[in-house]
Amino acid sequence: MHPTLFTAVCMTATLATTPVLAHGDTHGKKTANPAAQISEEKSFGKAGDPKKVGRTIKVDMSDKMRFTPATLAIKQGETVKFIVTNSGKAMHEFVLGTLPELKEHAELMKKFPNMEHDEPYMAHVSPGKTETIVWQFSKGGEFHFGCLLPGHFEAGMVGKINVTQR
Ligand SMILES: [Cu+2]
Image (cartoon, rainbow, N blue to C red; front, side, top):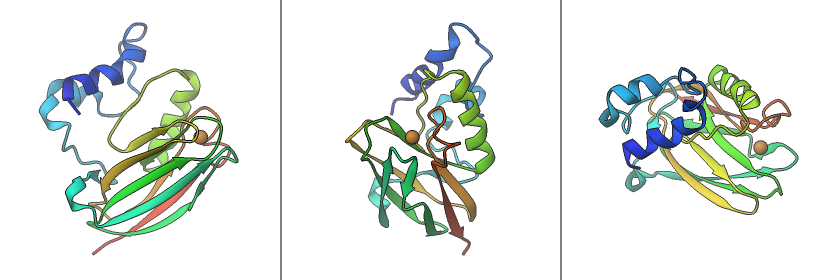
């Protein structure tokens, strides 16, 4: 994705009324150095190279506020292609992160339900649709994925990823 567009999309929802508000922890860095954001590494990994996908994992999201499967085991270094399907009638999203980050983001989504957000570690999936993201788990640890639409996370729409260290 083009870096300028990427930042613009991300900022649109909040810029007009509250310029200091950022829903992620990286907006400042992005503005300062747009070229660095593409390869930015998070504690739970980084955007994966689609040519280096070692494994494909299908994840289903339903209106029962559940991910299936909800527990994943991954080896450090693996590049995973997630094929995320929304089999429900409501909008859902698949967002990778650490549990504290996801909780914080879910709280922000409650305050600003129309906030647009887009990052390489999230997929927004309309009812009946399928989206893919490619992510490399460059670091070991326990991570999570969640749906951050208002109320969904709290209703249990969260899954766990164990990345075993090499
Ligand atoms: Cu959801």
